[in-house]
Length: 97
Ligand code: SF4
Image (cartoon, rainbow, N blue to C red; front, side, top):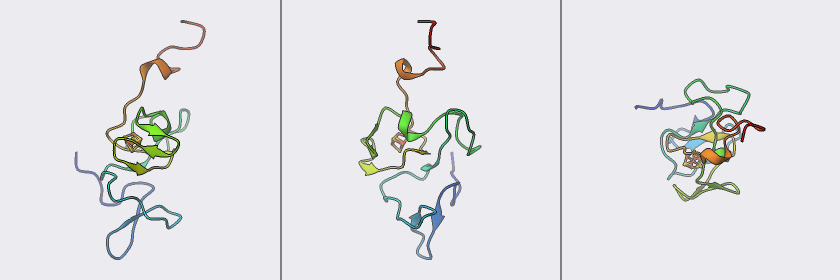
């Protein structure tokens, strides 16, 4: 998939560096797909599957992505997103397990 040059939640400076809307630089080793994610009950970005963001990804730990070795924001996402099925309340609704 070819991702947009400026996906949702990403800005570019005059040198083409990716920035967060607040102005902080996005680490260069994060992939082109890195962009604003979605909350469990809010679809913020139509390019991203529902309910997916870094927080619920198996590679995320305290703001760090172990897949790309970079700081990430909890509400962002990339196409390497993977979740632990045992942590998914939609797959195992409470009370049914
Ligand atoms: S691999 Fe997971 S934690 Fe890392 S940027 Fe992608 S979605 Fe976020």
